[in-house]
Image (cartoon, rainbow, N blue to C red; front, side, top):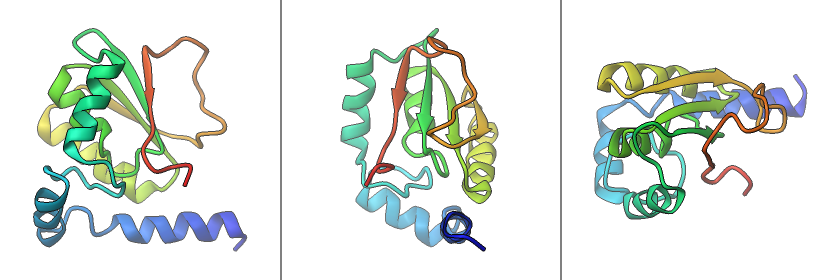
Length: 134
């Protein structure tokens, strides 16, 4: 297993806990909601991000490095925009897909690396990314 495979395996393991009730309680207390947060973005910061990006009905945005969907799913749910969640770890994308369907949030999931996104230029109105580059 090379270094990249090890990193994905490590993240897959981390995403297995995002749907557990104890994790959701902790997220609600610390972040303000429970979307499988694996970033340090708070709900207030996500709200500000949505306003600054002009997200709303009819808008399409991609959340690069979305993991289990925080804050992309929340932003889509709270603004009415359509989100495309993109990441590599399958466990996170699977959890995000379940949350999108379960909450009836307009969105899609795409397995792709942030440095090789499979979209043509100008597909999206906005791009979000939380704690991916650190």
